[in-house]
Length: 569
Image (tube, rainbow, N blue to C red; front, side, top):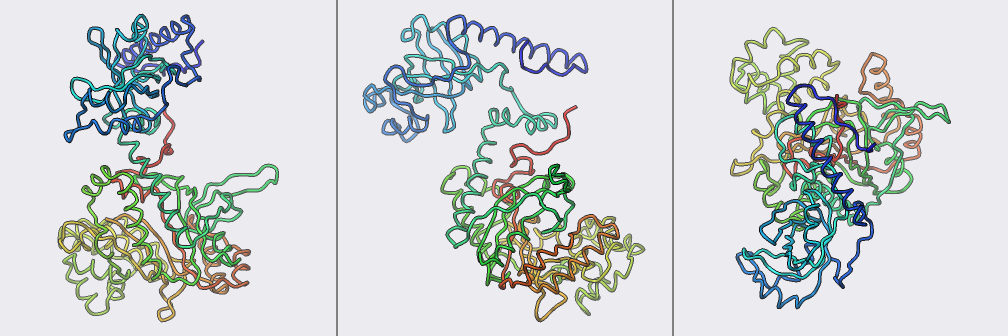
């Protein structure tokens, strides 16, 4: 019995026909694999090397050899190709992605990691083995060895002296991908998605370049890359619900890390003044277009820097990463950049949270809000809302299209959970300002949105950040939003062990009251601070979200090879 899994049971007549057709195709390919074996050929070979004196090259490198025969319109002259390459033999490998035959001539399109090229296979050259081409199907991986030429249409081609199947694909390539069901299949069977959709490879290639460019920028700035534990005995480093696991040998409950922050800052205490880590983090939260429970985070910590320094460096870093993509992938970068609704070309906006709220309040057209912020700024607005503003929602929502667009139901629910004015200011920002950042902060020409640093958060919602010396009710923190999407979170670090201990206690108190997204009291981290941590600033950014932003991917699942999905029932 074959090790290939059986197709799931058909649900209706249409499914039954589809499964029957697929089963017939698979059986036909198995028959061809058996035919190869009978000829003494292995349909799953591993001896890949030239046998006719050819030079093994990737397809892109083969093209370089014939570059001089390419005209300005992109076509090749067969005579010039042969003159330049002087009968050299090339050995290539790849997957068959298209094929057709006419008379004694067959055309196979081969794809490898560097691109595609046509095999122009002549019966006169292959002789009796030409008939074996009938055993080749779309998706098969083959090797070919031969000289270069050009087709009548001016396409650079290889004229093989031999063609051999290396791996027989038993399942056919998909014909098309569309609709919700196919999108789900793309994520579940990423290996097929990569074969069927070349642009998917471009996104993941860009992701790799983004990570490489990030490392390069940080390394050149004197940072040391480190690794810290991914299993923690306490919940800390961010406000999120963790995944719980168990170590049997030590009989210990452990938590998959939600952030590496507290360990990285321990290293700053230990004298590693500039450190960073790019690694997996895990948060037991909902799944959305911007959230996957398993994601990749960059965090770095910089002694003797402030959050102001980090804002400056963030602009440099993002532009530098984007420039690296432009160099490595010029064609795709041009396309992605043209489609972006935001711009990096101008200085990013820097707006305090209180200012963002008052600016947003003025744009709603709600007269009472206008009076409140004119008289007392954001404090006047919070006072107007009081403990519950539910009775005013219907009236306020009719004031303008913008007022109607506010998520009033969730805003009120969040407001009723707030314990203090710091939390209320944050709730007002989340619902009144954040959703409208792209329209409130625009480029000089007004055609694109500006990235926005929202700065100076209430200390009550920032348990690890340093307070302002002049405004102790606030902390030196920023989050960067690019076209309304949060990308970075950073702050001047809290290095006062007494203040940190008190904030940990407040987190424990909230957890006792039922809050899920809280931290534990980390006694060892407080002890580390008691040894003295230099003034420092720290930064966190999701690599997945950065990739989405730079490539225009609509969902985080488009930039993670294997995102978490519900079981396929």
